Amino acid sequence: SDPELVQEFLDLLYRACHETGFFYIEGHGIPQELFDKVLLCTDRLFALPQHIKDLYHISRSPHYRGYGRYQEENTNGKLDCKETFDLGIDSICCSEEEVDKEPYLKLVGPNQWPDEFHFDPIFDFKQTISEYITLCRDLGIVLVDAIFQSLGHEPGFVLDSFRGPHSYAMLRLLRYPPGAAVPGAELGVGEHVDAGSLALL
Image (cartoon, rainbow, N blue to C red; front, side):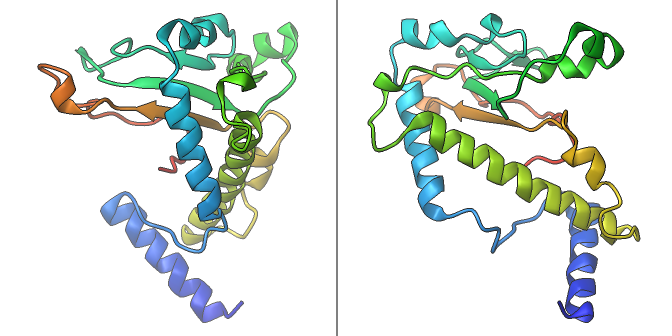
C-alpha cells in the first residue's frame, strides 16, 4: 500500500472518530447478496408466531442469547418499542473456574438457533447468520487495528486481545414496528451507548 494513502486514511479515521463519532465505510468485503439474505432471514424470524419466538427467549440461555419480546427492555426508564434476537460466535462454554476468574466469559457459548423448518431452505438461517457474524467480526478487528494506528500505535498493537480464543462479538437482530402501529410510541430505543469496543450498523 502507498504509505501516503494509508496515512491519509488514518487521518480521516481519526477525525471521524474524534469529531463526528461515526463513519460510513465502503469496500468492506461483505457482499450485498449476504446483506439481503440477512434482512430476509430477520424478517422471517420476527414474523414467526409469538409462541414460536418465545421458545428461543433469551432467558433460556445462560449466555444471554436469544429472543427479546416487544417492550421487554427499557432505556432511561422508557419502554423500548422493539423486538430483539441476540447471537454471537458459536463457542464451547467456558469452565466454571474460567468464569470465576473472568466473569465476562459467561457470555461465551452456543447460540439458540431457531429450527430450520421455519425458514425457506434457500435462506439457511444458521449458515447465513453465522457467515455474517464472522465477516462482521473480522471487519471489526481490521477497523479496531486501524483506529489504534490512527492514534500512533504500530499495526497489530491490540490484535491479540481481539483475536484470542475468548474474544467476544455479538449480533443483535432488531425489529422496530411502524410508529403508527404503536399508539403512544415515539422511539424504538432511547439514547444509549452500545456495549463493546466497536458497533457496526
